[in-house]
Image (cartoon, rainbow, N blue to C red; front, side):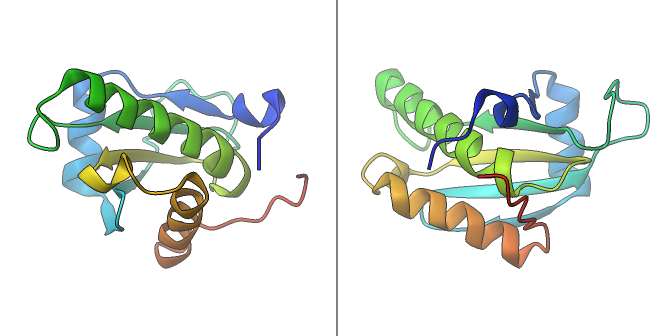
Length: 132
């Protein structure tokens, strides 16, 4: 499963620490083997053009893995999973944070995609767009 360029354009990266903190404090979360998904409604004052877009951020702590090389690999894998799954099945108007866990390095890619879809289903945010 690979999302098209148009589908990937739905995802806007989260970069500001304040956005991460507001999602962590006021949102919901679901834990799976490879990562933790934290979700909150996009604030009304955000500069999104449409409600179809979603914002996504990624974080991996030193506690997850001491090696910067491995932490970066975890982030790359999370970005790929989010691009393929959130761009197609994620509900617009929400902010998502994926927090990496140690199993993210060794878990198969297909299982990670399945985990993210499962988390979205449990959080009532799974939306089949049908255009894949």
